[in-house]
Length: 229
Image (cartoon, rainbow, N blue to C red; front, side, top):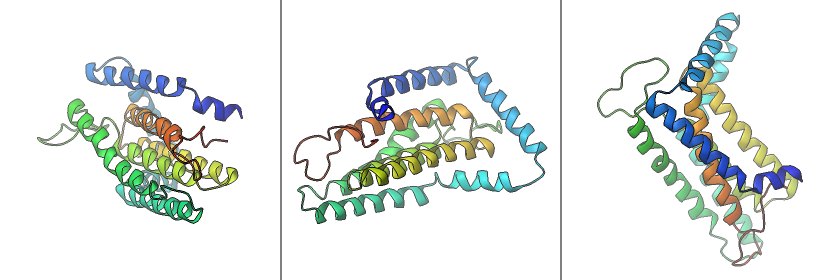
């Protein structure tokens, strides 16, 4: 599939790095690209004002909550346990591998996000000054938690599932990450670029994971390709 080949391309993480560096630079120097954040916020406020129903606001909060530690981390750990169980049933060696992968991923997320939040110390959309010891808004922790947790969960489950189930898991993970980001921007919890940076971080975690994680029966060899088949 063309989508599969594109996902395996080294251009994917390269583009993520370029975007992440460019956005981070603009946040650090309060550059003109931040005008995009302000424009999107104004457009969202206009849309919210023009809508007669409060349902989109409730949906925005619901989607944002999908990026919380609960449910994202339990879903990740459950996927690791299920993948290990399925792997063991197949009789393959290293059946336990999904368990430490899930646990280490859960620990990796704050290591990627918290130092950056502290270093950039970016105020949120409401413009309130940060209090001493408070982390900034950049990058978005909820977006990173959702994109990485659900993404790695999908990769683990794809290793022990058929092609159709793997595509479904991948689609659900991608839609969840997109939905969390959209919910955060809609609810005025984050700037758009906070979300974009976390999507880039997720790509830089998921792309090598997808190429490194073996499949049951692969022995000591690396996975031959992406799960996006």
